[in-house]
Image (cartoon, rainbow, N blue to C red; front, top):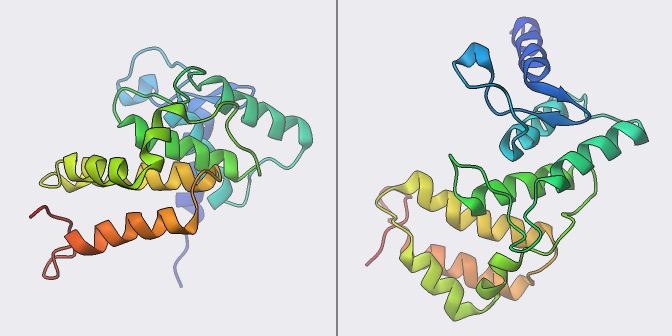
Length: 181
């Protein structure tokens, strides 16, 4: 039988090491060679997801409000995006929106920067423009758009069909990766 006790303890320690108070978390710590820790949307969302995975998502109303406020405070009110310099804005936005979903919450502002993609032609142009020769960042963009719009209730099943139809039409049957042409 596998014993994950030490691994779980390491995860708890990792979350604690990045905790800056009141539901706020850094992405990098000085121990990892990072600069002085600063609140970061990716760090906050990571912490929420790890706590959820460990079955330790805060349950008190005050702690839940702190986490939701910390996440929402990191949203750009004009564009609606959550930005972090090491990831695509679509991916970071989806990551934070998914963390909010764990609290049955949504972002404070609409995801204005994604709204043009509610149109099928615009969505397909966006997916066509991703550099699928680099599957990691391309999939972060494509999946981020779908996850963020779906979790915020902005897309219908018809829109999801457009999205998955495009993916189905561009998948390489030999590798399972997406390709163009």
